[in-house]
Image (cartoon, rainbow, N blue to C red; front, side):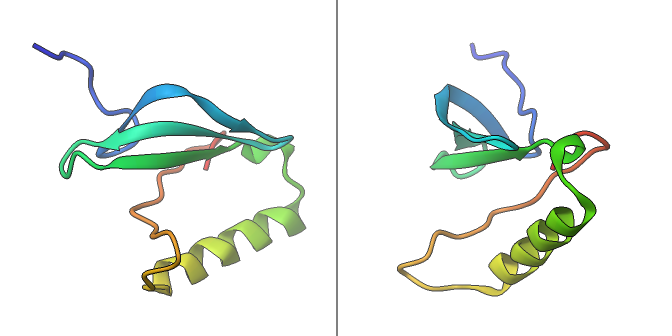
Length: 84
């Protein structure tokens, strides 16, 4: 029996880090409801200037609106004081 619980809403990291950038990292995960593999992008808010944070938030707002077969979809956004 798998006792691991999701740590990002309905998503659980399962693989190694896929990408590591100055302010963020990307991990492979599995959506707990659909079972589909997903990319989890974790952004460290503390390393962002206010202007960059605004750009990231604008990117999230745009990604929520886009539905296209050739563009990766945005499942959800989870945030706390330190991470987005």
